Amino acid sequence: MVKNVVVLRHNCNGEESGNQDFKFKAFCQRNDSFSTCVKIVVVVVVVVVVVVVVVVVVVLVVVVLVVVKVEVVVAAALVVVVVIIVVEEMAVFVLVVVGGVM
Image (tube, rainbow, N blue to C red):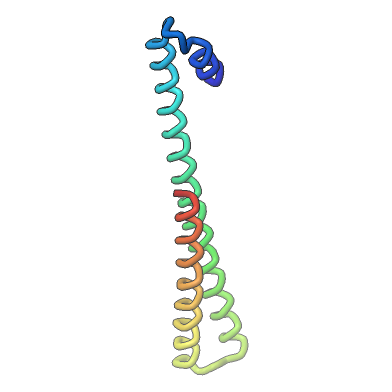
């Protein structure tokens, strides 16, 4: 692929430039779709990580509350608060990562 780009530079005198130009454009289009693919993969990975972290935090909070034997209402309130905080932090993280990738 890179060879086509080099050949394009060598053929700047107009000889076969149309053919090389076409190859160069094809190379660029392949490159664009590759970077889009990378963006999608990064976004999917970030989302999966966020979901896993939220689930782990909720499970840990529930386990701690069951072990400590806090009242159910207090436990539910604590779970909700922790989930909101974690989701908020992760949302900021996702926006920063996705913004950087895009």
